[in-house]
Amino acid sequence: GPGRQMAPVFGRMALGNPSVHFRKVDVDEVQDGAASENVRSMPTFKLYRYGSKLEEFSGADANRLQAWLTRYLPTVA
Image (cartoon, rainbow, N blue to C red; front, side, top):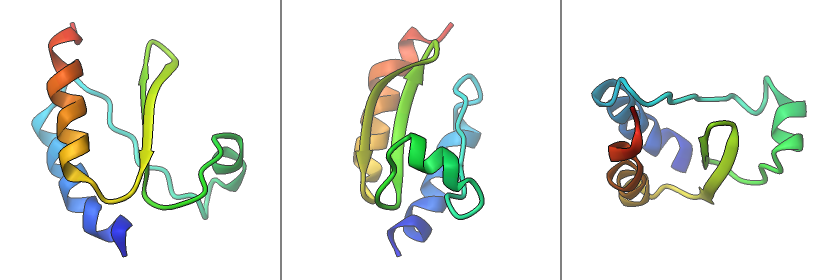
């Protein structure tokens, strides 16, 4: 499915951007967390900065993830 499609893309982005904290959460293992974050479909991506959620989207959209990196990476110290 879409989650499996995005897994290698997500992994490459994480390895290529060590100053950014990428986290993968298995919603089957962390059901309470998924519920509290209102995750309804997979994959769901959420962008946080200093503990505040800035953006989120659902779906297998590698271009959108790359756009986040392009937009926010210059602001990472």
